[in-house]
Length: 423
Image (cartoon, rainbow, N blue to C red):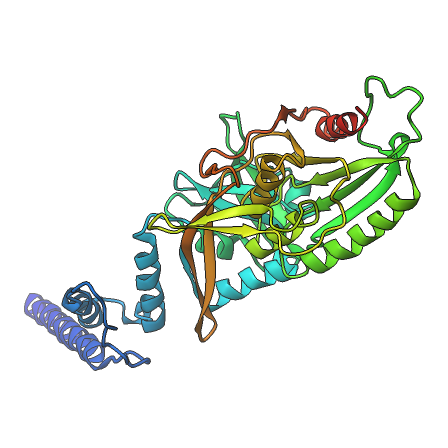
């Protein structure tokens, strides 16, 4: 009798479990069937185009994700749309053509405006890897030991190999006081290194400079033939980027230098430091170059995809036509800084000292798409006045000088530039 009761009890439990499971899965199924995205899809119609493209596959996949994907909470229509547009730009295999959702677009504009929160490093891509183009002066990135050419393998433990550049920037930036751990592979190193960096407010002053007696320049040690000339002076200007305030800041400091040079014959020349300058506005590069080249002189050639070339030439009067000039470059000098360097050398106005530059030879146009989003489109490539395309190869300096990483306080490149001006 007890066995029969036990069997009845087991049977009741199984029936109850089955009923619970049945109603449970059907309840979930009903809830998924009733799920509707919170954002309606509008403006499905494609714009007129010369090429015939069938978008039915795209909308078929979209509909199937909405109906069949198991976790409906992950179906964010705006995020799905942004991802599709990002994939569209990535299909061009051009890391400089990119779609920027509102947050990333705001971050980019803040950087050119000269203030943002993050680690203070300009990033780029090379061979589908995220790399450091240049750490900004006195930034957390520079203090932590990041240098131009470093490969960022991971961010907070996540591998970066498949990341887009905007996605990497978004992951690394963050509120002041928070930290991010980057797994870095330094140049000429085989062992990755984890570096923890505390984010801060980054204020970029795009132009700084000074006029000093040679004996007052802290980072140089010895120059052959300097004996008796220690009181002679050198003017120095550092450009960290070509951003929103660069032209104004440049004009302020160059006007002061011009007045000093007119009254002080001890100033032997000017050094323009473009090391670790990742670039910026093309118009700024033309403006800066125009300080040293006479009106009508070609600064840069812009070449379209069809091969048509347009020459951008000097269109303003500069103040430094006759001043002896040296330009410092390194592997962190890219884009607009390479345009200035190439223009001054090709026009025999300056010599380049340092290391081979980064090699970014294309021009992007930034376009606002509305609702805060933006699009950067490569519209042309640029060449130096002599027709050199630096893309992927960079500008090789006239005098190559490699810094001694074991002695960071000794700036051998600056030292060589000073020696060149004293000849």
